[in-house]
Length: 480
Image (cartoon, rainbow, N blue to C red; front, side):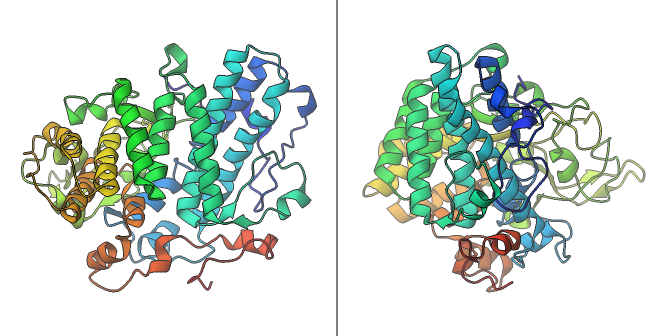
């Protein structure tokens, strides 16, 4: 079910307009003091937090740029141009890049919505079981948003309550990323104790216990606490809630959203309500007209690179389900060699208004993280680690890995498996940074020394520095 779309009512909790500083206080003329009184009010406030995940600065647009286009997996059609996503793709970003500005603003607006729930829910008249669940959902969402921010920008302001004045917004300075990660871990640990295993009906798609634990496992991997990552991911597996679908291609039709392999998806719903997704429009080949997508523009964004296309082993069933190497022009009848992803196909209701969800976490990701955590926590891969990665490979119709790989060789096998299993889903760049491989892999991709260590994080938006120069300074290596 596509339940947590942003509605006009839910937007009363968010700042009116896109201010370029952390002025996150609600400013609707409806008296906010008369709100947050009961379960219905709190659900509307929580809906606003979920809805912000679909905003352009989060999973609606910015996220696939910072996670996939930034990597060797995909590219922008206008690779030599000066569009914001082309600049990002070519590591020519400045602090005025519109994508990172949008990401900063929209993600903090989402964090505001989470903080509003957490600040006010204690005073609402409602069932305590429901109260605890809502608290868990808000903490999961806040943790997810901060996780994306800290991975993208490094040190960021850590705001844990509503911002109620402009002066307060100006005072919010960056803190060390270790503090941000500590808060993320706290939020997810508490959320995992408060959230249910599953939902039914219109609640399907909300954050669950498994989502909190799976994300916590990814966080522990990122901070290189491999033993804790191994243990929490094993709990997700032991739950028995999730399984690999038999057919990899069955993961992607919109009719099969929120399936048994899915752990958490950002929900979109087409229909002219402003809640649809633009992925298939954006990802269709530029200049393809209506040959690939029948309604609206074809953006030529998030295009598979030759590196990604060649990464698939012979016989890998995931390749045909993940990408096409071109299309047949419906005017000339000729084949055009212009690759694009197949994971986000749908017929939009209107331009940029389709039903495709964004899958944030799924069970194959958990299995591969678990194998990685085992390998890194000890002296190499165990039988359990091989079992986890081989389950993913068997589903792809591939042979199992040979036994006896060294710790380093197994790590590279995991890196490869994650690249092709999770292609276009927003993992590749952060995987490379997490393992310290981004410079070597990306310079090999460019066949030139384009990427340096400072590129592991993005530039801080100049607008944030301008309004708070004492508390927010530019990341090293970026001079403009």
